Amino acid sequence: MRSADFIEIIAKKLRELSGKTVAILTHAGGDPDSIGAAYVLSNMLEKLMSARALLEIPEEPSTHSAALMERLEISSSENVDGADTYLVLDCGSPEQLGDSMRLLKSGKPVLVIDHHSTSAEKFGGGAEVHAMEEYSSVCEIIFDLAEHLGYDLSIEEAEALFAGIYYDTARLSLADHEALRKACALASRGINPRMLLQGLEVKMDLSERVARIKAAARMRVYRAGDWIIAVSRLSSFQSSAARSLVNLGAHVAIVGGESDEGITLSFRALNEFIDATGINLGRDIAARIGEEFGGHGGGHASAAKALCKRGGLEEILGRCLELIGERLGGRLRELQP
Ligand SMILES: [Mn+2]
Image (cartoon, rainbow, N blue to C red):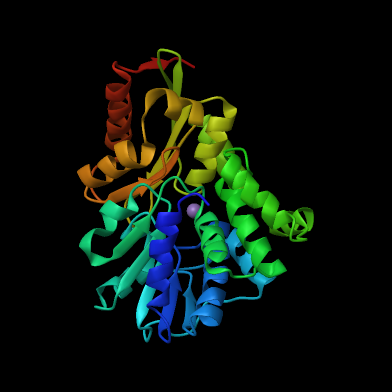
């Protein structure tokens, strides 16, 4: 168990939900971690706490989420407005709840269980936040919780938690011994990781391929010492494109573009860069940019997002580079193509 104290506090909170109707909310669109955790937690609430569990994936489930939901045979509940309590999973800031942010203002208790570095601060006093960044995923928290409560996981539940841990550790490449131990413990329950993951792998569609290639073609590259920072413009598939620019060779990639809501940005970095520089993209860059340009931002050390309601794209990208430059102790030099 990663943190017995942390898990004991969450277990105590869940016991208090006994007999209540609890609506579990994920971040907008969901992902394997939030969906897997929501699935197992809702079963635990119903079986151990005699609670009634509802599920809401705000806005549309992503293709990845939809594939996992179909496999687990679950769907979003009809009416979560009538719940007694809201339980938010895997959500680094209230804004990530999308349309469902309105539920936070219902006056009902809101409990957040998370592993993001930003959730405690971002939810402020409006919710009771239990977050621990040391956990690789919310699924890993739920694994410890099941062990603590003596809950015997079914094969489907083991699959759900495995999927969450697998994807949130970038296919186990970021897993430490504890996360890997849990993945193995889940595998040893008889799940078939190959079948599971093949079923969840979504083939990249043509529009995403075109977007990634456009991002590469429009890329500007900067250097600070031995660090390479890539910046590009794209209005959709920004996270996918930022990831692909890091794969291409950048230590950090920022992809921004205009959308109906404002200017959205996606940030990605190699762990090598994060470890050596101490820069946390969620806290030091995305959250600050969001705040400075009338929006919001947050996420993890190596993957983050921001939404800006003010300012132009070039100005915002320039400010991102300035913030990174400040942290690296010097100006960034643009590499001529
Ligand atoms: Mn997660």
